[in-house]
Image (cartoon, rainbow, N blue to C red; front, top):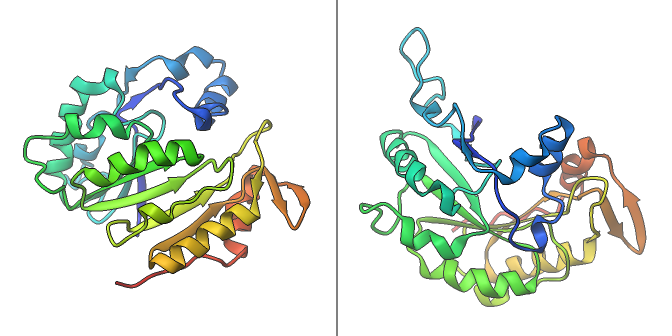
Length: 244
């Protein structure tokens, strides 16, 4: 499946422990734009999915998985007016699949479009959790909202997390990853394997998507370069696919 990015707005305020070393803040700092990370602004790409090439075809072709708002949070309160435009675009491009991650799951139900019903077929919402406290706060809310496709994203994983209470057929996948960056906090492989066991027991697809930079396996600490963190996770060969 082809993958594309759509960042209709930029900037986000840190709200929980997982935000401490946010990659967006790091990237902005590299370009001397540290203040931009916490300041909301609509980007020039607000209507990107509707843009066409000279031959009149869409620049983002049909069937593409669109990583949506990965330099902010789609459900940021400052984006409420702009989100109405985004929802209309998502409706019009029903031939695309929009992947949306959020730490603000407690805002979602109040800002869904009026025709949402039990969810748009082309919208996948991922609720991110980084520790047990955030899992226990966010996931009951997440599961109470009508959503067609749900992902749980445990990233950056900061401790052992028990998701067993929340894993059932309403969850399409659990994806786990460590933290990147110079100040990355520990990702212990035991935590990853334990989550995999929980998913296998519950019949939920599992993905280990990234080791992080500060990775511990069998009591040995590894400092893994950013370019290798995803490939090293794949080499672990522990992903689990449950076919319903």
